[in-house]
Image (cartoon, rainbow, N blue to C red; front, side):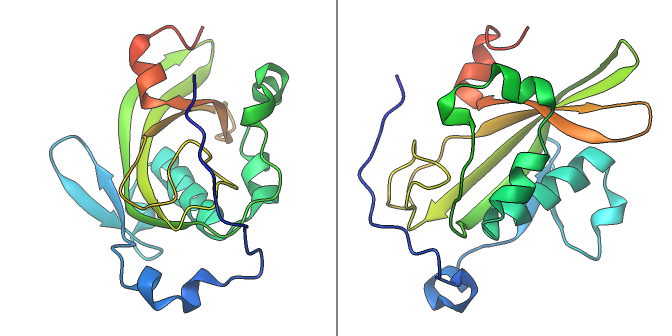
Length: 174
């Protein structure tokens, strides 16, 4: 069972980039291979795989509260199999910090390339509009794993999403 928290009322007009407390946090997006961590930026993103670039863009979509673009990252199959908690309606700008992207697994099957990528972050002043399984305080995190699928044309979409705890069980995906 997912833990639920009570949150403050969301402020959809808040520009988090004007919040000095948030701007003082480590907002770099780190890429880890399990041993070495590097920072990915707009200038360096071309040095990374298309999947990591996809995740970098995804982090920025979340930070900017762009729920329309967020929902576009998923495959039609994802929405067919999603439950109510998986569908994202409007969410505010998210004060993500201590952000890390890491490959968990990669393989090819049926002409498609699959990548499981773990995304870890904390949310300062979480209001529950994006993640309602994390407390309001910025001291907790639950990593999530996105299962990406790349077709022959190179289009990347997320086929699945789960917490890292679910992922480790091996029972979540087909």
